Length: 427
Image (tube, rainbow, N blue to C red; front, side, top):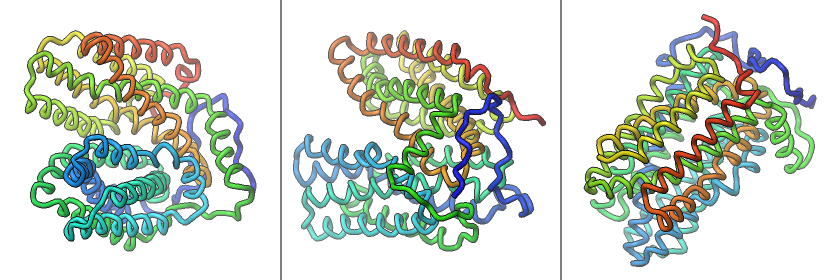
């Protein structure tokens, strides 16, 4: 197989994707049957998965009575997201992506059904919960990478940005709706949220079976070991100055966002918010994320990548300062929701650009590399937030995070690759 050109170009404008299917007539996204099946199935399964994120700790607490065991279950479920993206990305580029997603949905449905049946029969123990949680987390890594890499093969190049914005809105709506749904379903019975989760995976699987398009371009036979293929994706990413810089910037901002989640909750409580008020704050933040997802294509058409990257980081820095200095729950909630609004603008624009310039045979590995580098900061941010709260209090912790965001925004402003990034597309 001929290796793709890995040299960093001086002109960062994306070329026309050579592997995009341009022979098909362009139809509106809402009439693209294959995209709707992929989007709808994933929407249903994400809603079920999000519901079980709250049901898992509640279940472990119910069967063990141990908060440590509940925390351990959460850690084990998230562990694959740290350990598996790089090898998963290589396999996503090697295996048929749609078939891989079908197997992931089938096995995730089996795992969730196993929890539901064992719980209903009152034979469920912590080891089974940990094993199924880890397996489901691992399969979700594979499924997510394959689904993201498949987008340019399901929609035409002109609709990639719009498709990603719909995916972004889907994920944020699932978080907003699925979390309270999990609590409600668990109240109906311990097995109910897991039975519902299994059914949602079957809905996703069914949708995949009816999709006609392939999720990858025609591939040549692969050579080289798994390690060599992983390194190929990392090398390609590192030789793209703009993508390399923005990936590191995402890691820096993710550090702040993960710490902020806990800091914002404690700060809201300190300035008089009730538990209901804290819940509303998180709900409004989710709504802000959904609105940002819907607005993202508009911004992508009118704002250049460099301007968006620099502007988003400075917006986060200013809003973080507003949160740190807020004296009432309303100001804090508005600023927090605005931060969530900005996030999808970044994700959709940068995601569209990355997919447009990444050769199809490398997409899984490059997505895995960016995910590993950017998401590796999340557990560090969680730990940092706890340490700051313990040592300095909520307001000082928020001020420290605002200062960190100013550093990140300054780095974005000074980065030559960001300043040289493409402007808005010609209309």
